[in-house]
Image 1 (cartoon, rainbow, N blue to C red):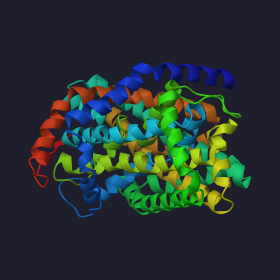
Image 2 (cartoon, rainbow, N blue to C red):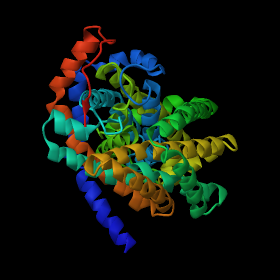
Image 3 (cartoon, rainbow, N blue to C red):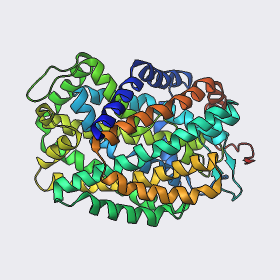
Image 4 (cartoon, helix red, strand yellow):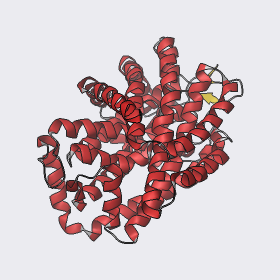
Amino acid sequence: MIKTIETILQTVSDFLWGPPLLILLFGTHIFLTIRLRFIQRYIFKAIKLSFSRKREGAGDISHFGALTTALAATIGTGNIVGVATAIAAGGPGAVLWMWLTGVFGIATKYGEAVLSIKYRVTNSNGFMCGGPMYVLERGLKKKWLGIAFAILTAISAFGIGNTVQANSISTMVKETFHIEPWITGAFLTLITAIVILGGIKSIAVACEKLVPFMAVFYILGTVILLIMNISSIPATFALIWKSAFTGHAAVGGFLGAGMKEAIRFGVARGLFSNESGLGSAPIVAAAAQTKNPVRQALVSSTGTFWDTVVVCALTGLVLVNSGLWKNGLDGAALTKATFSQFTIIGPLILAVALFTFVFSTILGWSYYGEKAIEYLIGIRAVRYYRWVWVAMVMVGSVASMPMVWTFADIANGSMAIPNLISLIFLSGVLVSESKKYLWDDNLDGESELIEQK
């Protein structure tokens, strides 16, 4: 029965992640990059702005709090196991396509945040509500698309932000420390409940402390691993570049992959990791205290930079540089084997990074899911959603890995479509807001009042 379900899910995923969606996704990245005059050139200004913790304008949490919560959701198992899965299926060339998805995806992440903040509202409790569902309803005047996006978000959050994350850590802990998945799941469920039942402010406080530590720890760790095997790095870069455009022939236990597979799995895992075009991160960006949409949108765009351009790239280099991808290992096994090469330091980096990445992603995505539920049913339903969310952490810890990953891919693609539609049709609004606040050097300008929901 489980095998049948896995086969059906894989068939749906293969269809959904065919050429049309990949063209729509990457095409939107390129379209917005051009339309917004290569907004990526402001990335260092955005990084500087992102470290501001002072209160400015209306909102629930600071620039930094919104960014770390979004990063908590995006920097997850996709940055480690997801990269390994892309290489195992698409060859070393998938790393370059994943990286390019991040570079061009910065423009899309910026655009999502601009629209979500511009069209955000306040609820009856005085908290901010925003995201593609409000953009589709208030900006595009297509409420039915907003409802569709919210439904997809509420459901898919359990895949990309919950069960996949819990499954990855429980599997890794069992293989590394021989601890049964249900024990890991019980612990993870408990600490998740302690944080998310307190709402966005509790989540932001936890993420502000956890995200900087886990990001710095992992980046330094992977750099050390690369230095330890520095002699082969030039050849690794050459291999990634060549494989991205020609594919890679079968070698050792690796079955071989063409350029099509490199693009497909690189782009798919790139979206899974950085969520640019998915429409999730702008939900928390809409809660930020900001003077105008562009200020927080710049901050939000740095999430894609850190997630994919830096973290995923470093993971990909470590994995390809090891040479173990030739042995035909799947994502989790390839990750474990690669980091285990470096005796004590490798497994330690992997264990700490994976656990913190997983836990932070579960926290961040819980907020996305509850905002979707609030849009659909009302604020009173949020408390019940939180309890279901906590319970699903346990379910994910003991679920089938192939089924969970495939479900996450389907959820990703389904969410992206209505969000990408809004970005394309409201690109004129993005240009107008960017000119008003950024290109005309008015980044401190105040925006209009926020409507009551």
